[in-house]
Image (tube, rainbow, N blue to C red; front, side, top):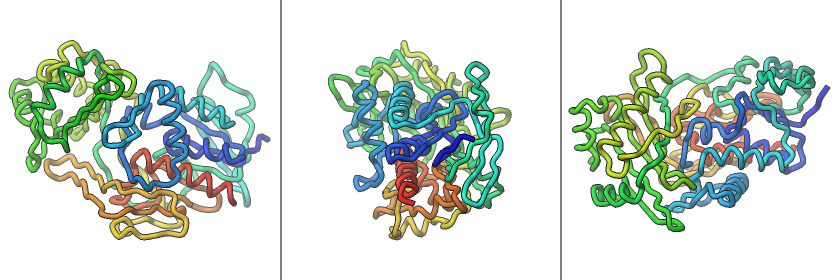
Length: 412
């Protein structure tokens, strides 16, 4: 029987941070990922850039290591607001492979946990290998582990172990994409003159390359400069009103002619989110080519493999972290996250989304990652109420959760 100190299910942001840190601290780690690459939201869902969080954040060594590796590869920049999370998603796949292998993590791609048995002091895990090309006989043998970490995003392992869950609530999902062939200099010059709001639109030169960001939503309570452009496109039948509900774009590190889209946000799904999402992407790409200077020769170069899911299952752990804890900045003996990111709840209705600023830093305790015995959870399915989770789900906080849990387990 193969034995590990930690088996981690899910090679997304939290899972990678946990695996890397635990291995660096001398633990024997097995990381199981259901698809063929690591990175989760960054790579598979194209969630870039990572949102900026507190300058006093803790458990940031993995984030720093990933940034340094990507910068070395030409796949990361620090934006003008000091945000180091502007990553290239394709190079992130390679950077994560390199970091985790060098740390000594055993990685199994295209695999999942099919069976879990609880013993008094350990778990017996059976792995299902879905890769018919590289199927390994040793994976058919049971694996014993002291700790098991659910980093699946949807709490798949906790479901198998019949754990208790918190009330289920939802936010709209999105399906991100990237367009390349953009004349970024032309678009930057136009949008910076068209939109004077530097909360919405920014641009800068980094090492001779232009990087930028701009946004629009259909909310009537906001004074978006791009509103007349979208209204005209709807009137002309280029896009639907639903397509215009949320629009946010960013440059991509290392690819100066590419723009990443934090949209479409899917609010009215009648058949299949992927089918409807890709149809919306095609309309939005035509909108950009017809209505935004600099996009005339642009094309869709990438569509996310997976939906951008903001919230799904949330496990009931040893401590349920609440929005009240967050708002008052409650202190804990063993925090794994320190952040000041706002409560960010998306809605499918106009003028109903929430972006509630917090006026002090808040802490997430290790107890919100402890489910039972030696079972732990990291990522968006942590033990937190709906509003608190809406602030904690961002990539830097997930990195910190994974790293913080690994340090906790290494000391046990």
